[in-house]
Length: 286
Image 1 (cartoon, rainbow, N blue to C red):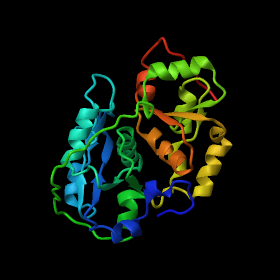
Image 2 (spheres, rainbow, N blue to C red):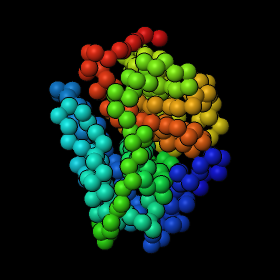
Image 3 (cartoon, rainbow, N blue to C red):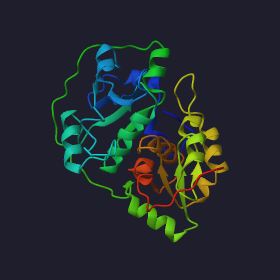
């Protein structure tokens, strides 16, 4: 476990996971998703990581399909939050329920695993953590892998929805119109995207700047704390994080939770929804 956070229980290290791989109550979920660009048309597609998981994964893990299993179909928005019923059915199929603990990882940026972790907490399941560095760090360290398909006996997952964890545009607009000095709108996209368009008054702490590119793991706790303090985020009583589609915002949300920030919401629709509504305010520039 990482020891220098206020809540280290939400982040596990590779050595810890290897030691606990065979714990009977542990459920390891691979949540990998890939964005792929067609080299000829430049069209962007979203691809499940299931095929890569089948080719090799952390032993005893199962693949949870973020696209098909735990996102709600929507005509224009990607990765909309599922209903409590849909989420409960999916997690139950993976053997997640009372008396179990979960470790989530992915092979393509830690934000996919943090999205699943945030959904688990949204529906009342707190005994979950993210693998620091995910598959990238695991493979770099030469840790054991498997191609076996683990099948978990289905169990009952009982959801306890926390509406404040994932919010919609109306609540974001109310927060913006209130002009509350106690709340912070946190944009987690890269600087160029932030300067291109953003919700007015937003602060910017890019999720990618908080990760070691060599290992895929988060920077040390002191560096993470300094990044948010420098942007004035830690001064606020409430943080509303957003990004492009509600994914990377959950990575910053995890870090803030690790640091002990208590009142965090993620704007689920994020800029894919906000920018598409001409009635909503947008600002740009540095």
